[in-house]
Image (cartoon, rainbow, N blue to C red; front, side):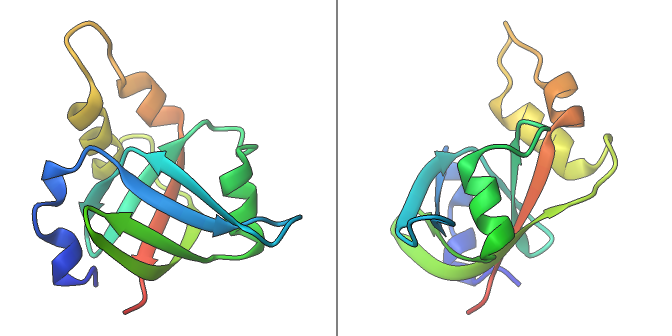
Length: 119
């Protein structure tokens, strides 16, 4: 379950900050990324090819940290298989879509990463 402090006003934050361990360097690697919180997890989407450094990092070492607002917690992250019409995909497309762009197609094809706080 996502700790209550991460859910406080999560919708008031456009981004979360995910820190992975570099698979080559062993050094922290932090990204700013869109997210939604649902079902006790934070959900992230990225390009479907899975070649982003941060994705390859978490596939090697799933222990990460995630920051929302002023709260940073340890977490486990991994790529998960969810249907193209899954609610978390739609939620991200709606949250970040604007009148002049439609993120539904991208969200339906994107790689889904589930982040589960471990505290």
